[in-house]
Every structure is written in structure tokens, then in C-alpha cells.
Length: 272
Image (tube, rainbow, N blue to C red; front, top):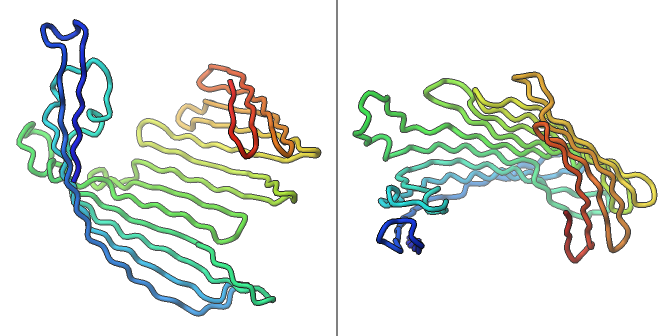
């Protein structure tokens, strides 16, 4: 249960009134349980595998009736708005128990997979705009993270729209990490970002360590809808034991910029 009050004071912007308050309250409930099973396997160092299933049923009601009041500036209370929905999610976790030749035991999470389906109760009971079809079922959301090997990371998120019978959002990425010694890692990644009717962009990036603390990196993003490069980034980096500096150039939608970024390792960072 939660309650938020947003109070604003004005200086002649709203007629005779010089202040106003907007209230929002929220009620949430959640029911969940955990099911798990362990399997004996023999795959390299992996000797046992645990599969955990975490089903959850949740309910949310958020009351906000002050959205029509004067808005001199954007406030988070307006962004969240009114909400009345229920959701069911099913989360899966796959964890491995590894044992090397010396008998040393380590644990690793190989994969997670979740499905989430929300139902908009407010939309189902809507009386306004009777000519518009009610669509209370929100997109079915699937999220997968997959780490089958120490150097490979796969992350995906996909939305399936029930009313359009197709995928309307997707974010897919694959990253390969290569250890170079002395705590340094080279990284290579590709990504595809898709929003139906708006965006379909593919990107690639790389970070390569050189000698004597130097490293270089680059990234390129291309919009497949218009077959045009929409962004790029290149940088040169130097790191010592206690400080580092990166000089980078970036181009985004035809706007170019240069940045110098300083890092105090273990303390913080700043740049301009």
C-alpha cells in the first residue's frame, strides 16, 4: 500500500491560485511459490543441474484522479497515471554445480527465462469510446538470458501482441568476452533492436585491449528500415593502476561530438 502527494506552488502561472496538490494511492498484492528439481548430469565440469520455477500472480490498483489539473512542469506522478491490472508471470532459473579435478566446487547460472502476461482491468471495463475495440490483454513478454559458456552472453526480450498476432518489440544481443590476462577482457557484441512500424536497428561493437594499458573501441548502428547509419562511436583509452582517460568521438543522427572522460579507479569518474 502506498500514497503520494505532489504539491506545487506557482508565481502567477495559474490565475488567482498559487498552489495545488495532486494525490495518488496504490495497492498491490502478490501470491507466489517456488518449485525446484535437481538433476545429475555429466557435461564437462558440470555435475548437477537445478531447475527452479517461480510462478507469480499479482494485482495492482493505482488511483489517480488529478491528471486534468494544471501541469506547469512534468512530474513522475503524471507519468505513472492511473492503473488497474492483474498479471501472471512464470520465471525459470537454470543453475549448474561445477566441480573441477581438484574437487573445488563452483556454481553458475546458465539461463533464466520468464513469461509475463498482464490483463488491464481498467481497459476491460472501459465505457468511453465504444467504437474502439477493447484490448485488455497486454503483450505477452518473454525475457531470456543464456550463459552456456563463461565467455558468451545472450540476452533477449520479445513482446507478442495478441491483437496483431505478431511480434511488436524485440531486443536481442550476443556478447563474446575474451580474457587477455592482468584482469583485462576484450568484448565483441552484436545487437538488434526492433519496434514495429518505428525502428529496426542492428548494431555491432568491440573493445580491444592493446599493450601498456591502452585500448581501443568502436560501435556502429544502422537502421534497416531506411538502410542508413544512424550512429557510430570510436574511442582510445588508457588506464594505469589508479587512473584512466578515454577520448571518444560520437555521431548520432548527424550530430557529432567529442568527449574526454577521466576515471579515478576505485574512487569515481568525471568527464566533459
